[in-house]
Amino acid sequence: MTTVSHERMPAIFLPHGGGPWPFTNKPLFGSPHMWDQMSSYMKGLGQIPPATPKGILVVSAHWEEAVPTVMSASKPPMLYDYYGFPPETYKVQWPSPGAPELAGEIQSLLENAGFKTGANGGRGFDHGMFVPLKLAYPNPTIPALQLSLKQGLDPKTHIKIGQALAPLRDRGIFIIGSGMSYHNLQVLISQARSGSTNVIDDSKAFDEWLVSSMLMEPDRRETKLVEWLNAPKARSCHPREEHLLPLHVIAGAAGNDKATIPYRDVVMNAYISAIHFG
Image (cartoon, rainbow, N blue to C red; front, side, top):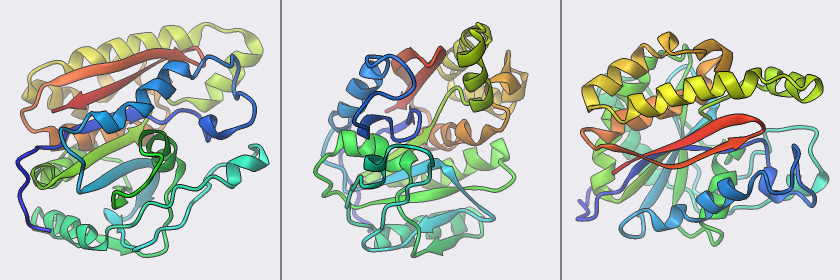
């Protein structure tokens, strides 16, 4: 895949929500309308690229490997990487074709940037991918694949991964980082039982820092992302940073593009934002 597109694709970081939330017969996690704004946002994702993407690359919070690893199957299976949900959520299908050729190109770009890489022919689409993309592209015809995070979860490393992937945007590839700007499940569960307001206060402080940092000039936002632990309530919102680091990849792929905040909401009592570039 070497053709250069005249339509540069965006690079976006989105929240994928809680488990298989759109695909249940009854609402999960509280109010039936709690997910309305997130659902509307995701259903509009297909309208964001200036042309139909030639491929979709997702960096999901739910996959970590010793080296950056790509899905290489031509027909990836589904991966229901959650438990305790209603039976219908284990029958969800999103049969997008895989992208073996694109997988090889991603490996080449990363290896040229100094990374060792891997390929996995058995890995399926996890819920960080199929939840938003089934809403965005209900008729899955665009070749799609995932790239793992790198174990160790080093912020600088993931920005460099994104920088290596940036040329894909000019070749028609829509790059998506799928995570959450707030992800502390233990606290979310305990606050539901206790009625605590810590989640909304902590998440608002962190989300305001995140949004303001991403709206800065590229060199400043990169510094902020590398030093994200200095943000207010950083560890309260991310006891483990795997749901934040897809943003680092996306910010790396963004280059000098300015950020926009197309979605911001309070879900499960936590402030949640999406960040787009391009």
